[in-house]
Amino acid sequence: MKGINYFQPFSVDINLMKGIMDAPDNRVVRTASSMRGHYADESALEKIIREQGDPIHYEVFEKIMPQEYGHLCFGISRLQPGLVGEECFMTKGHYHSILETAEIYLCLGGEGYLVMKTQNGDCAVEYMKSGRLVYVPPCWAHRSVNTGEEELILLFIYPAEAGHNYGDIEKEGFPKRIFKRAGKVVIE
Ligand SMILES: [Fe+2]
Image (cartoon, rainbow, N blue to C red):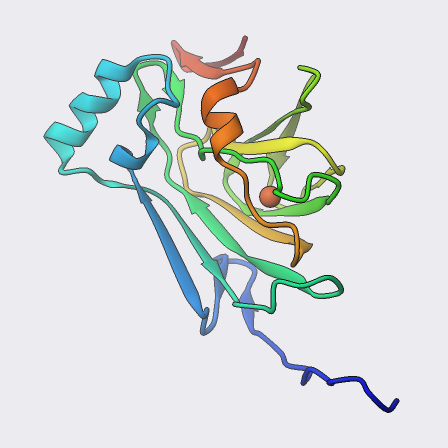
C-alpha cells in the first residue's frame, strides 16, 4: 500500500529448552544493589551486596523495536534463585507507562509466580512453571518471583508503545510478598 513505511520481517532463534534467544539487541542487568527499597528485609539485601560483590539479580535480553503503536516488544528475562532474608528473589515490577496495555509471559524454565496489582489495590498471583503462560491484562502492574532452585526464565511479549513505569511501584510496593520458610512457599 502506498504511504506505508514497511518494516522488514525478521526471525529469531530461541532455544526453548535452555531459554536462550540468539542475537539479542540489548541486555539489561539488574544487580542486587538495584533492588534496594523493594525487599522487606533491607539489611539482608545489604549483606548480599556486601558479601557477594553485588551479584546479578536478573537479566533481560530483548530485541529493540520501534516503540510505537502497532509493533510488539519481546525478549527473555532470567531471574536468579535465592532469598533475601526469607523473601524469594524477584524483579522490581512495573506498570506500563501507557497503563491500558497488556503483556504475555510464557515460562520456559524454573518455577515461581507472577504477582500483579491494580491502582485500586487489587492483587492477583499466578503460578508459573515451564510451559505455563500468564496473561497480564491492561492496567495491572506485574513482577516475577522465583520460588524454585533454578533460574526462572520467561519469554515476554507486549505492545511496543507501552513503556515502563517503575516509579509508582517503588512508592506503592505490591500488596503480597512471597517467602520461603522451612522450604515452604508462603504468600502473604
Ligand atoms: Fe511489562
